[in-house]
Length: 369
Image 1 (cartoon, rainbow, N blue to C red):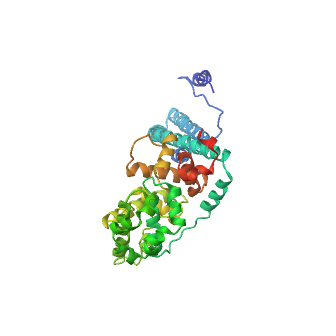
Image 2 (image 1 turned 120 degrees about the vertical axis):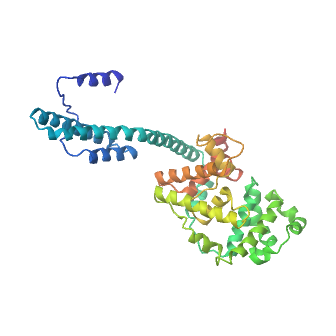
Image 3 (image 1 turned 45 degrees about the vertical axis):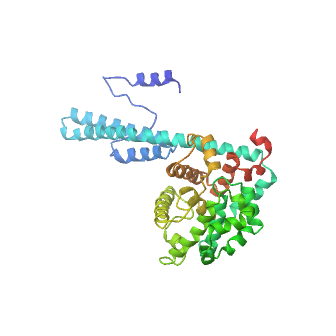
């Protein structure tokens, strides 16, 4: 519709002498207005295509209430002035709804633009994929939650995830794991044995073999994780017993699930701060742990945050706080919910787009030209 056509319609009904009735929607009448306005506003909130027709029917009902009030008042039935109050108040409700829904609609539109950009990235990656991408997607798709792990199993995850952290080269760390070097250094992840290790002794004895983890301070954190796991036994039989009791949803089937996820995530993070759990009391590592355990989550590391910058989700900065990183993860969770897409598979696409070294082989070099 053009601006001129809009003006023609407005002028068609611009009269102070008579009621001019539109034939656009046949529904109307003097039914109570609140139900029709409610349905139209809910459709607007959800961006339902029925929104326009519902508002049109509501507008006709406002009109018919006013017309009927005019007829009754002309006949001397002043009690039916109530129809005027009803119509005027419904219009007031409409104005207030628009004051609030205008921002919602803007947010929805902005969100959809970001989601379309993610769609475009997925399509672009697929256009440059190597055979290895199909295998990576299959592996990520087959991940299943494992909520019955022992503390030794959890310590293995802790040590491996700490090894990968802080921009360590993924391929080099993967080599340490595949060759069993970390298994040897950390006593096959026996919690009690690791808790007794001395980080300086480990550094002196093994650093030439495990230097791929980048920072020697990580050794102290790894041992610290084992020590905190032992402390947790005083109140929880295992780490996973505590995590299961936290009620963080494993799968996200609705927006309310996402809200619950972050509410419970915050509670878990506060507890891990309280007990001085190294590394996993920060958002990035805790997200990484949950993703590894099969929760609907991704790790907001430098590659993912770099992808978020390119997608216009966050501005480019040298560092990001927990709230910003969590916001990126929540955006990706919402995207996957709206597209019925596996978030662990999306994580792989984001790592490719963000240029992670361990993911570059999944696409041809032309992808980065």
